[in-house]
Image (tube, rainbow, N blue to C red; front, side):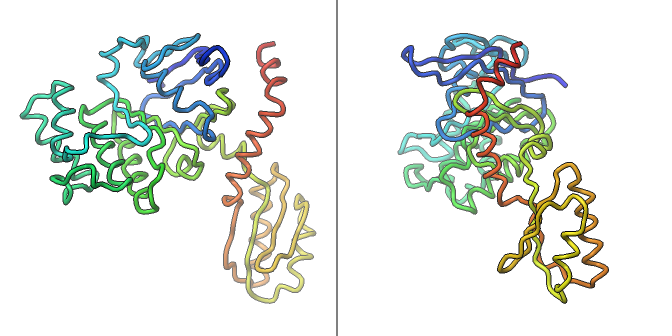
Amino acid sequence: MQSVIETQSLTKIFNQKTIAVNDLYLTVPENSIYGFLGPNGAGKTTTIKLMLGLIRPSAGSVRMFGAPVRMDSSDVRRRIGYLPTQPGFPDAMTPITYLDFIGKVFGIPRQVRIPRITELIRSVDLLPLSSSEIKRFSTGEITRIAMAACLINDPELLILDEPTLGLDPIGRASTVKLITELGNREGKTVFVSSHILADIERFCTHVGIINSGKLIFNGTVTEVKKLIRTNTVELQVEGKTESFLSELEAIPHITNVQSLRHAIRISIDPQYHSETLLDIFKILIERNLELVSLNLGSETLEEAFLDLLEEEKSHGFLRAISRRA
């Protein structure tokens, strides 16, 4: 699989004292939805600006579509759609006039530009507001018009910086759906930065985790789930459960069983996670117990992610030395 974005030893130091991006090696596969995950201040936006050639790196390099990215790389940028964090617009413009202006900047002919504007306004669900001034828009509506703007040139690569930031649940769901649809289109690669693990988990195929400017994980979503998967399962059951707890404790590879107010929490040896779940379900069936709810640790996924960041903070220096050895 070819790479759309590659960085080598990418580093950015501001004012000779603040290391925003630290020796970053990043690879974004073609036709992937790549989630760039990290806490606020981790270096996500700085990395994106370096990728786009908006700021100069202190060291290292960026290549997009196999070509080096510099501050004058206009040919490369024409193949990219960029959604910045909290985008701003001229107040007096409407979605139609703004998208028409952006289309002219890209040199899109009128006969192509006008149908595309209509299609984009419809696709981001802004048709009722197409002639309204943007200054009256909500945060979610502004995000949608910004999404349309970054699609006007039919880019091969979309770079979206915190696209769900500040959105209500309806706005987030709409944005997630649009990103998923874009990622499923042939010839499209989507790079999405976020500090919200749930968003990345919902639509990404690959993920990179950055902390304090340092990339601490790069791989598929399946791999990162395995990396930070908790070994705790919570069950809520109904029926005659008098002997159920003792039967759970007798299952090999279950390390702990806790009876909570409304659930049973079970700790499992991670190496035997799947087969132990089968043993639990077998007992449920044999005892004719009704499974009301099952939680495989998804609610604690973000806590596990934070544990990963804390582990990197504690052991990152030793890990870096061992990687270079």
